[in-house]
Length: 78
Image 1: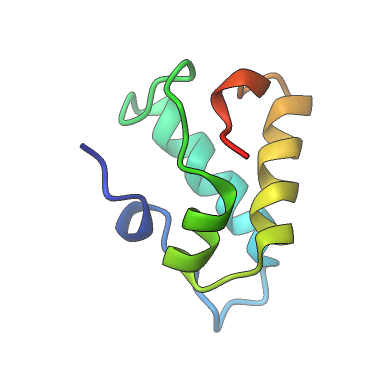
Image 2 (image 1 turned 90 degrees about the vertical axis):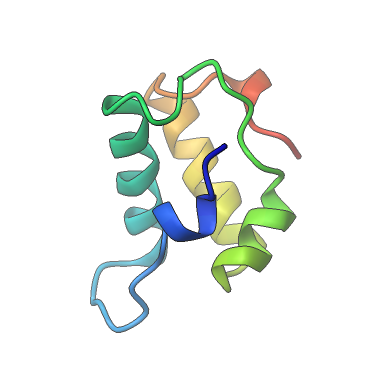
């Protein structure tokens, strides 16, 4: 099982917005096969807590991936 907080770690010193970093990290995990696009992702609140970022940041990242059709809306837990 993947440890999302380790794989999708956010660089808080980077000038890249957290949402962009998270989208890039999730996209990379899907591209490399580490996460299947049909795999249910962790709940928004859980991931936000593990990464030390806001719930809205995770929600926005999930929505962006859904809009880009890289994530099935059914696979992102509320």
